[in-house]
Figure 1 (spheres, rainbow, N blue to C red):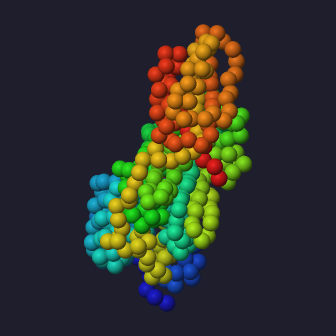
Figure 2 (figure 1 turned 90 degrees about the vertical axis):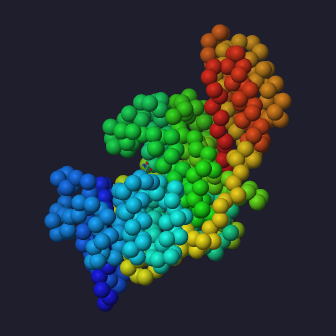
Figure 3 (figure 1 turned 180 degrees about the vertical axis):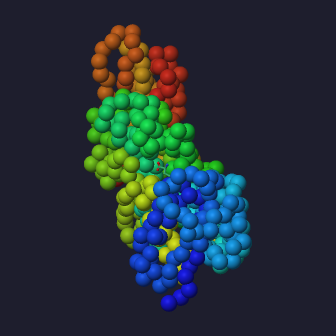
Length: 430
Ligand code: HSE
């Protein structure tokens, strides 16, 4: 039997505590599966006195997480602090420079600095693993980097944020508005007190940037990622989408379009009967299309103590086994800058919801703009009759260039009879 693999954990929030519990509970199985004991040597967190519900007295307590790196008894640093800068970045950089393996759940760090850290990991011949950074318990990273590695990947789509999926599902089930449901999600602990990272799509964007890098062998690139959140989705949008046979999902999408790549995070309509349409509540899903494998997909819990700890410890098992693969699936020096295009080059069907003053001729004005932008309408819904008052007009279109559709929506929002901005979403087929 080889010598034990000794780890230091920085960050003892929900995930850190989950990792400690898992390693204790499955100690014997971990040893059998990795051929070595996996031992926690030291831990570090901001507040030593915080009640965490488990006994930590068996581990050395380190005040400054960087001291974990200086401890010669530690082989692997588990970084669960979070954030793209500051302590987390310093710790991961120092650990790699010191020749220690790193396991992290930090999507922001890797989305912004993944390439430079991967170069360092390659140089030092150590692992930098981040399974827990994307879709929690779903082995999406391993699937793309290893399971689907034989394919030319054409597209990846995912429901990558459980908070948004919970809110959208709950809005549909209860008929309530975004604000109401968000408040309830915060009370239940499904949404943070500051929900911006989740509901503005930033968390999903970090995750998508990592999936895009793995899928296409390019550097993670947040700058060319178009991100739209879900704050503007109304109960009325959800009801209309349902009536038309769709669900609204915050989708992360990267895809080859000819020689270009696109990546975006945005709310889309998906058929209610489709694979993604059935992924409800806090669940996440990742769908991969490869040239030989066809469509493959994974679904499961994307956050929380158990699922995220499961992903962190899976990475630790790989390291203990001596299974080292390039951070993003290819040597870091071969990772190129992606040749990205705007999602304007996409073609698709669209959903558009316009609130207008109920008055003869308004539909004709909208139709004229659509005609001028070569947008062909598939279906129109207009409910109720309230002369002079705001009413909803909802349309779906035939296939159209996204650029034309956006231009048309912008023109429509300038009409004097139109209230506010039209809500425009692409309809993603299966
Ligand atoms: N807040 C995220 C979510 C999990 O709701 O899916 C961590 O990235």
